[in-house]
Picture (cartoon, helix red, strand yellow):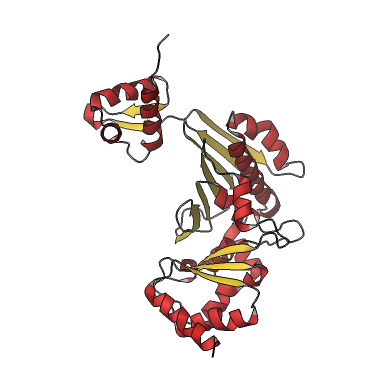
Length: 344
């Protein structure tokens, strides 16, 4: 029986974790990291290809390596009164995911059932598709429907300015078009559990990626329905409980914290200047105890915008903590200016 040394396992794990970012130069990258020869790394690459953990295309120095899917699965479900997310999870999804750590499986359980239930309850779709691709390091899932797009539905039922405003409201959490059956917390928490979470609908694109700010783009990729992608490493220390505790600490207020990405309130080259813009940003934030305004990619704000949030709203809601995140020097000066006015 061939023995595999611990260092060899370290090299293989490094290759699997970094090959997506370095498909053409993974041998050079691994050799540099471990201070070994490329020939030594190539032996490990050959082993991983033989074990079907990697695929290789091209020859010699032009070779490209990719993680090989260990599981590829797609199924279409007809929407009906009998269709239920818990049964689909237990009978189909959980067996396909296979053996994963408990914390990872719990995240998938939460994420799938929330997104599949949204498609059942809100989309008015005839069909729902689920796709799963699992590799040696991560798993990705797609939940898609051909019904009413999520962003247009939110815009219409909440009377919002446009699709981008729907994205801003969705990012805050506690937003639902059916409060009798939904708390509006599903997408907020689910998006923060996964390494990567994306929604494509109505020509708009929303994403949340661990370590990066939420983003949006206006594209014309999916005119009808909604597609949700979720991706998670097969081994991670993250857990559903840790995410809940971050935004809903164990006190009487429950889901009490939110982050408002102000970049979503900027349309094109428009600056955040007016009180009307500030009032749109402030919509529903009184539902939270702590509100963090994320100023990443916001170059400047107007006096009226800052005054409406950090003086007028703050004085009217002294029990709500307002935090400015990722603010540059110019933004900090404007916030300090209006706060000084509140103290006079």
